[in-house]
Length: 340
Image (cartoon, rainbow, N blue to C red; front, top):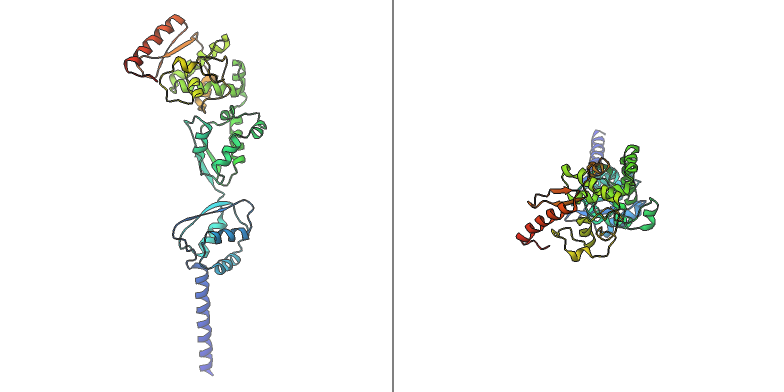
């Protein structure tokens, strides 16, 4: 009798070991056969079957049946949006945990020193779930922008360079709304009132700030330059800003603006058209926006880069004195054979 009991117990133990081994193999053994990381994209509202189809199309699983068993055992039902890096030799357990955890986590997104919308989209890049092309499409969608009282020309004004914490799985539209919300917070009642006192809208302040920043990024001159252009605007004078001409011809690398450049027929050519251009020629820093709002009061109407090529400017209220400053600057360019 005792021998029978021992045999039964040994059989049960052996069966138990087999079951444990099978369970371990099913759960923890390697079950991805890709030789390198594979990007698995799970779109919004994807079904379990769609995820399985994606795993099949990438030929990831060694054994689909064991994967399904672990999915069921771990009660994995909700397919979470994201771009998942599937590593070689992952177990079913590790793979299911990866997919079940989702990618709803914050990312620190920062940007500055950005001229164009295309450059902004490049800086956003692939940091979030949406594709850069989706954001670019929104920034050129006139109907979408019109809902925010924006155009392709004015939309750069809503992006305030800073550091932001944004969740990874955000949509392109929600990302835009997040930026727009930050823009509205920046333009509080105090700043809005200061703009109104100057006679400008927030968008126009951004446009003027973008010109100021292109003229000189140095803090010591920004408020002075802002005051000079505000003086010209108030007198109905042409702004005659070289950076707007560079923007019009699409070449910010130009060191010298020629008479032929001044003839370009563009609303951004402030040598040809009065007032501010249609929109910002770059995405200005918050500090430059504030330099415009707190511009330096003076009587300057003219500015010219200093002949020492330091990046600083000579300012004057006299056209004759400005002509002398410009002559000295041109002489330096000629001496150094700078033609463009």
